[in-house]
Length: 116
Image (cartoon, rainbow, N blue to C red; front, side, top):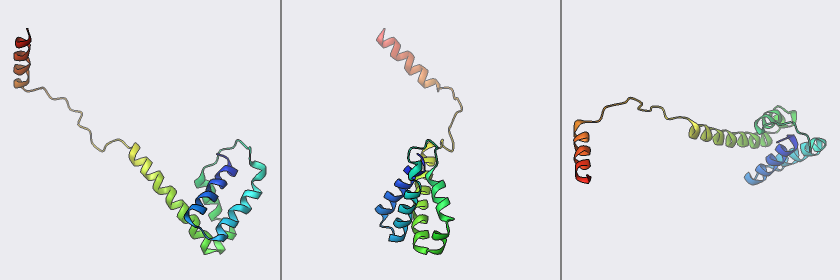
């Protein structure tokens, strides 16, 4: 997703969490600035956008905006962590091959005799 689309998603997420009016106003201001890049094909991640926003002077000076953006980053980190945990291979897999016990082969031979 490009910058404009990411800002739209951030705006939507801020509305969903009941963010401060200043936070929503800042994102709307950034959306107006990003309007020319609406159909740009450059891909940018939401984390990059949030990190960039956290370094803006408007955000640094306003604790409400900063806290709202930190909350979005926290949610994003939790979702990312859960996805990584689900995709991770098990910590230990038993890959050693063991021979079957003699009783297994006796039972199989007996079953073959009955069916013949």
